[in-house]
Length: 277
Picture: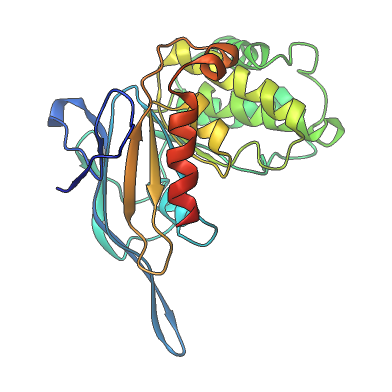
């Protein structure tokens, strides 16, 4: 394990990789590799990628477009076959999709003819088949209320704005009570005001639920505001973890307290310097 001590880095040493006791690890990516065959030979997207994420940790992942961030997330979700290495959740190797991993995509992928409530119930009904109908409805309604959609239970997804649809996507992911929450640039298509509102909603629910979360973002400020650690990926091909930055802001945190913190611009500069190399 190599360690890069960055001049003026606040508080903690930044390390390329950290190894945690197995009892603390929720998600473990070991020697991960992804290869796509092409007419000109194999294209290696990811190679020798190692990352451990602790229970109840919120990790954001940044890197240039094409570095394999979404590929890695889709492999964790079980939606993309692994070419080499393995991924485990609580020590159990994943072999495909499962309710232990909830996913929030950039586009919420709702059933447009169904209501907000029905869209959330799709997952709830699958994950809690032994609950009563009333109990399942209560779960779905609870999370729709948490994302501010208490007045939209019975509105069709096609009648909702893009921001409201993404709120349904957030409610749907939390409602199935996953062990790991995977977020693929969930706010990337939204205007800045809506983006800020949904960041606040996401972190408010996460503070209560404390589900291990892994989020891809291109937004440096978003990465810092939400995360316990920011993982930086090298450019592809053969992308891997290039650096990891520990964010030592207390939780719960507010946007104002983060922006006014002495270390904020040091963190920001470090991430931008990495991306510009």
